[in-house]
Structure formats: structure tokens, C-alpha cells
Length: 463
Image (cartoon, rainbow, N blue to C red; front, side, top):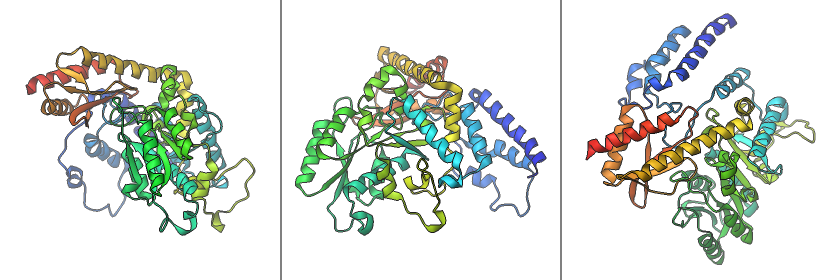
């Protein structure tokens, strides 16, 4: 594409982005197209000859956008928030333009060093010591698998050459509320489903340290090898915060690697009142935090911190001759910290976000989300028809209708059908509950009060 043509269509695309974000409230956050709608609307094969960019952009707006679930919408309360801010979008644009691969320092020195600078900035914002070294991956699923690979390197050093076959079974411990990515990592690392041990939770759905100690001791007596413990700071179901200091204390008794899953909750450590709940997390061997969840950075951006980066590198470092390079004492090869050889310039968008908002600005945004969550929880608690299904943690409200599962689920579905809001559900104590996750950068108090009104209208219509 000639530069002049790029300028024309680039301006058009950027104008579309600005207008999209400016008018996002007018767009249904969720629609229900029939499966296969896009395949039917598009040709069965790519065009033989190139098409005009204006036509392609028009088809994007006409065919693709109406079938999207709009995570940038202020009424998006499902899963966990993932909203893109302006500086993050610009960072993503420029990262795509320069299109570097920071696999080794020499392949893109500035990209390698910016990742180091950016992850250290974030660590200091979150109150983590400089002993942690960070790398940026796509999602927490990858970060967790890499962390557990480092744990395997520590627990099964002989497996690096010979594999796990013939060795005692390994075990990874996490609470009943832990994310499914932990179990996926256990499977991918060759431990099998039996390698995942679910630890019971207390009334607030937090991991029980006593149960953890008992499980590890039992496995040791049976000849198994405890490999890692994964406490969670903000579980997906109810945002439970495991007692991380107590969990780490138990793990240290047995010399077990600790990987702290703070993919959702980690950014909240910016807020002093919440940071108290994370006390002790710096004692973990590795920590994952997802800026694309609650730091307004476009997908995908997951930071994996390790106090023992040399172990992480030992688990993955394979350097063929064509990748050997002379590096100084203060350089590193990012390819050594995971599976991927190709590494995008993910740090740029996070660097833009942190510089544009500053620490105080990011703290203020998260504080407002915490306030809005408290507001919504108070509306539930004051209601004669709705009840909290779990204590409020962070900015996730988990609640249900007193009339039962059918009304709870139907009310959620009716609200989603309005296009004004999007909610997701889970099951707590064998009851269907609604999860309302506040973390979108555009969500206001008016939006929160609107979804409460929509829920009550929907529930009344079902009764």
C-alpha cells in the first residue's frame, strides 16, 4: 500500500475508532446472531484480485461489527473487564507498524529493554520489590504454564533430559475456586489430571491453609512430589482472595514453589485499602498480573514476574547457532522465558497507558470501580428480592434472585437481550448466581444504576 493511500485509509480507520468509542453507548453490547451468519455473508474463498481498502473497511463495519460482543461498552459486566483506553490503542497501532520481534536483544534492543523497563515500573506501582523480573506474555494461561514449568524444573531436575516417565507423580495445589488455566497447565506439563489437587475453601471461598498442609503431607507420605502451590488473588467465580501469606508459609515448610495468580486482582494493589489484602504476595516465587484486565491495556498483555528468573530460563532456554549473539552483562533474550520465539512489542501499549494516566490516575480509576461495586452490592443488600451469593471482593458482585435459579437465569438473559448490558453467571453452593464485574474504563454510576433497574424489570417480568 503506497504511503499516500495508507494516510487516507489510516485517517479513516482512526476516525472510525474515535467515533466508535465516542458513541459506544449507542451500540448494543451484545447481540444474538444466528451461528454461521458471517460465513453465509462472506464469499467461500479469498478474492482472486485485490479489493479497494474502502470496500474492505465498509464490510468490516457492515458485517463484522454487528456480530461482536463489545467489551469496550460501559455496560459490559461479564467475565472480567477488558477495556481498551486511547493510549493503549495508539500503542498497539505503533507496535503493529514497527512490527519487531524481540526474541533476542540484538533482534530488537529497544523492544527488549522497554519490556524490562515497563515491567519494573509496574512492579514498583504494585509494591513489588525489584527482586522480581518481568516478562510479557499473551494471557495468564501462558504465564501460569511457564511458571509451573519453572516449578517442574526445580522439583524434577532430572526430567529436563529424560522426561517425567518413570518418575514419581507430581502435584500442583490450588483452591476449589482456582482458574481452569491451572489445570490446563498441569495437563500440558505432563502431570495428568491427577496432578491437580483441589484444596477445600472456607466460607468466603478462600483456600484453607490447614487443608493445604494436610494434602502436601499426604502426598509426601505416598511418595508423590509436591511441585507448586497456586494461591489466587481474585478468583474468577467470586473474586475470593486466598490468604496468600499463610499459604506461602505452608509451602515454605515443604520447599514448594509458589505461583501467585493475581491476573485479575493484581492491579488493585495500587489502592492502599486493597493492597492490605495482598500482604505477603511478594513472597511468591512467581506472580502473574494481567494489564489487559484492569489496567485498560488492549488484549493481550499478561505480565509474569519471577523472583527466580534463572530457573524460568533454565526451563526453556535452547539456543541454536543462528540465534547466538554477543550480549552485554545487562541484556537478556526474552525467548528464554517461554515457548514463543516470536515476541510482539506488547510493552509499548502498557508503557503508553502508564505514562498517560500515571500511577495516581490508574489508582483513581480502580478506586472508582471499587466504589461502584460497593454501591451495587448495597442495592442488592437493601433489596427485598435479591441476595448476595458471596461476600463482595474487589469489584465483582455475585448475587441471585430469591425466587430461585430459573428467575435468576432468566433475568440475566433478558437483560443481555436488551443490548444495554452484558452479564455472565456461575454456580455457588449449587445455586445459579449472576456475576457483575465492574472494571470498564467507561462505566459510570449511571450505568450501574441502569443495569440494576434492568435486572429488576426483567425479574418482575418473569414472576
